[in-house]
Length: 71
Image (tube, rainbow, N blue to C red):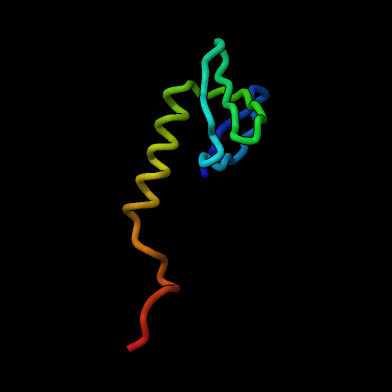
């Protein structure tokens, strides 16, 4: 999940797994796999960077403490 902001400044969180493509028109428009289109304040490069950072955290952060083994 990545945090983005709409053109009116309201923040929202997007499931980046739903991104189909991103384009600059000049506003950044994100098209989701559902067909929905979202316009955001962030640039295309910023959305890509946030998505990459999210995916890196998924693969590099340890699992939560709640999944520890009993000895």
